[in-house]
Image (cartoon, rainbow, N blue to C red; front, side, top):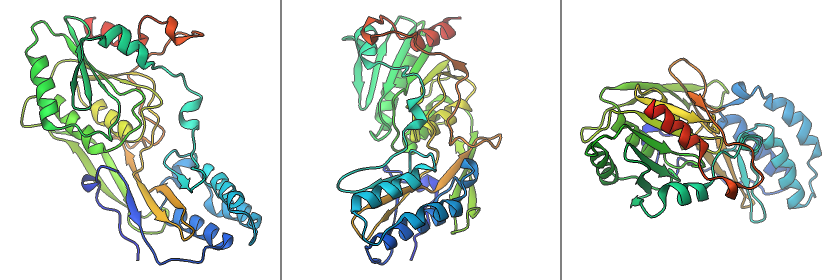
Length: 336
């Protein structure tokens, strides 16, 4: 029996739901059928990706041989799943993990941590839980958050917000989530709640309710102001294409706040919380099973665009760079 996907607000830190069913035969044909069928019932972006899943069945099913080697079967199924063009769709085995990487490979890197560490943080940073906090000038504070899989506590946020609220002459805050591959979207909502003084509609979450490709329920998502310390000055949120999954959600939450400007590149997307299926042969399948739309009704699966595009100049060696062009763009926007 399938377990219905829990409501978005109740998603745990892994952002994932495990679907369990009775074991099936583990022969290649049965494994292929299970992969295709589970994806057919639970994948959420067939319409957005303009994918004809039935046509892909007709293309790939005849290639399955009852006696084919497990690696050959894995590669064939991975090739079919690749057609979904979704970084949240994976097939995991003891010998490989399939994934679609093109969501960022054709985009500029736009982030070099060594530059951040050598030219901005140096030995002035304070490590506040998973957050790296520093003043990069007398007028600008900076926070880097590397992974939403690392929990941010109320105490972490209280310390940072109270600190910046007590800095005389502070003109703005830069929050950097470039190369943040995601994790728990609840962390993003908790952070966004520190930068608004009113309830803000952030978008609509669509949750799978049945096997039909269009079977979804809708849930409106709001950012409610935190009842503790908040900051209402200018905030620059730095993103790039490797800002993925929960980081895309966070960018969307922040985008709707009046005092926030997104700077950098469009996020990597990944706006579908994953569902899992353990297969009888020991493999594990993961597919996106929800979707999110901004208040204007646009899907954020392809990423959240910045308000101001900025990227690094072309260089042969990142060590030649003495500044982060995207941070400097954000600095100029704050001081302008």
